[in-house]
Length: 185
Image (cartoon, rainbow, N blue to C red; front, side, top):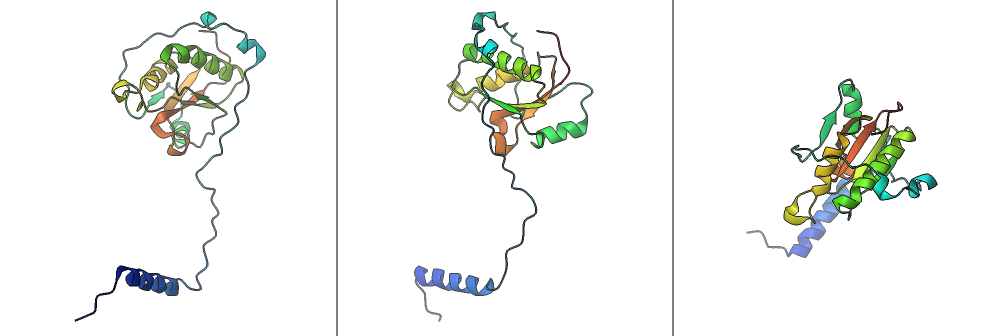
């Protein structure tokens, strides 16, 4: 009958066996970048945007739309390849808006101002962080729902989808913007 070894001895034996097995092995060289993107520093708002009172900002309508776990919206004419690149996070966001901690009435004017400035600056892609709603009543994602409704009302929003996991997953949204000049809403 084999003798029983203490757990410490078994762990030491396993470690010794592993070290003997991998002795002389060299690690493989990686030629791919890790799937992490260092966040960009936020750019300050232009002085004319800061001076606008919140009451001068138009409001957006509430829509009766179901909000799924993963957001997805595409205007006709957007190529499937571009949408796939957006969903995978391969179109880097040029700017980020973080709505965490804001109420809907506080978030809406900030949201509108941010999107209008992004379009005026002719940014291709932006990231909106709205959260997953775990801190709200009944764990419902209120700002995510509003983001889904509001983005559909901007004519220069070509597509939007939930972000890749390294940019926030379902708690954030990539927004693909048209670079053409549009009329004001």
